[in-house]
Length: 339
Image (tube, rainbow, N blue to C red; front, side, top):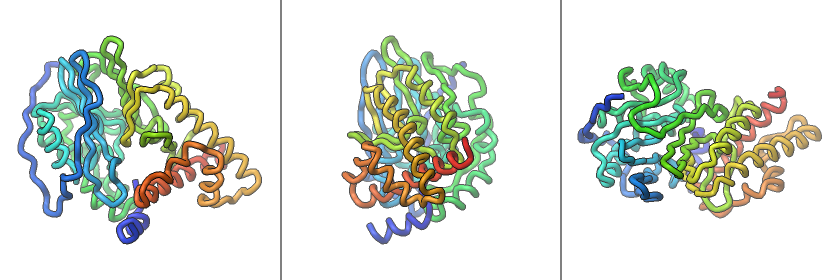
């Protein structure tokens, strides 16, 4: 998520299954164009297909960033992290293009606005779909006033671009697992947020991991970064990564864009967490009041995976710079507090 100050810079400088049928979405006035949204088929094997649905950017620099995952199986269809309210009409168009007029499950990895802000809007289009989320998130989903207020406070105008968070009907929440789709497992992965959870779908030798941001952000190529905003607890986040590594996925879908068949990227994310802790601890020893900007410069000298940021265009690189700095803040606070 992005603060309004950076947004301004970018804008100016750069069970019994209840079947559900999609109703027609209504575009609010000023809704973003859906022209830049697209679907990518990544798997189609043994009655299972996987698509990444890349939604159009709600703000400059957010291309290839908000990416729900669509999984079709013989037993039903599920969607992971639908994104913010502003992009739900575009998501509905992409789902229609993929022949989806029914959803069985919507899985939320966490309730940050860029991942789940549009969940109520989506359920209004698919009224029989059930939502899976961490139990501690239920009250925020059914009464999102505090969540919306917090989003506005942190994000400023970007929160308005994402669109307001509407209340989710309580009966839309799936209280008991497993749900209607066999082979689906929930893994508690706190770290990026205290209520974060990841999902694994297993079908014979196939294991598809929907990691959310528990394994950081992977944008393809050699670029990965931690997603460790304050407050950050190293042992908690590292323990979550260990759980994901133990899964041994044959495919990993990241919360922000990346997809890979190589489970080694989970190991690299764990190595990166250790590298950051060691490097920043070393830096704090010599400069106890080190600025975040200085810490970023230092890390870019130490961390080979950050170098890939510079291959992006100016606006995306600026977006990534902000997120890296926010993750550094989480690490610096944790090191100073001994957490």
